Length: 516
Image (cartoon, rainbow, N blue to C red; front, side):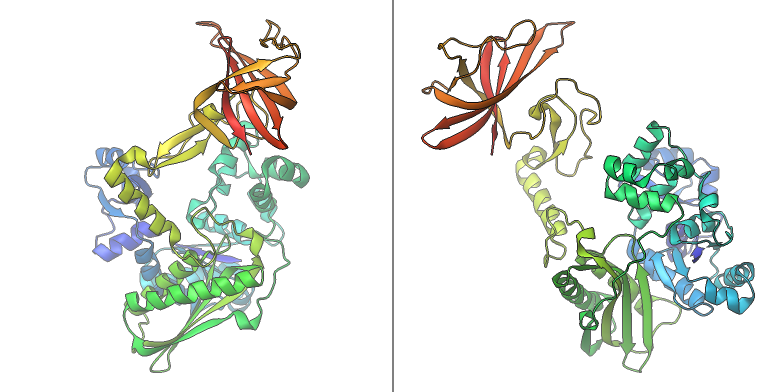
């Protein structure tokens, strides 16, 4: 693969849209943090991830722009068109990065180095943008080679990747959020891609999961996805004739949302998901436009609609190669698909519910405006010995992070599964042995009898069909010793069964959880 990378593209696009001079320090900010900054800003100490106020404190002349993917995609279209003049098969990875098969331009220009030099000159002449070229086996290695301006010989990608940091696996801009995996690998002593690649794949799969297996393939210099692709059936191509012709981006985007939902539904019916999307448009004067977007993850309906909207904005509003008439025909083609199970939908995004997560988010904010920020909360799973300790309720919109480290050992932790219902107000209970005596726990963390009956909230005792435990802990023994014991019981009465989590604390039993 041959990759063309335009460094700091969000900054370049923002500065170009505002007609700023190249020597001005510029930063692009999202969620009050710097996501990209120019070279003059870096000289003043501005870095990605820095808070906006800190960045402006280090560089008072800093010009700040909000993050705008539509602007970035629109202004990147001339760069993609310039590359396409010399190389066929252009695929946009994201605004700022395009990839093409290296064999074509290398054979035409007499080598990969000459092709890289020609493409750099081409982009500079057509758009005035600076770019770097990288060539390697596989897209991941080619992107990293582009960031270093290197051409990696065939078969040498793994050797090129070996000394690089595992932090290269975390690529949020391309849809790969692996910060947690990278942090875990570093704590395990696997600080380079070569060290991670030496771990057997079966061990990676058993310990870290499916996404780590994909990252492991990248570290070994292999293709991002296995070579067994599925070609989409021809009837999955969706098209729409636009009458009257569309000349405004907002009108074209409305059609794009409908087509995106139709395409996603058709793919889902065949158990497929799209990873390369072809966008084909035709104008009233017979002009044709075609662009292919490559995606790291299978596209959701919102992802399809976003890319179509970005591309239409680039065609209709771009300064280079703008159509002379409105768009009369729009077609979406899944150029490459994978098995549909690769796409994991979130809570709010179901099949056929385009942009449902955004609507849900607006509704949550509206409820908070009426009832207060604590009226809508999000549960975040963390560490702890009891189910109530492991869950933290965070107001909607706040940063979601656990109160306790979920990866800590937590001796005495209640084993899975956790109760389906954790009571905010525990119910009093009494646990009896076969002789009707109340059961306590000894200093050796053992029950003083075998649980036979349990009375909940003053009710009549119910027979214990099965039980497990106890799991005992000494909480804050160095300050105020508090011995706690957890017991799982299955109560039976009149052919009905109820599973409860009982907790003994300060010589009193309570019901703190109910299992389904």
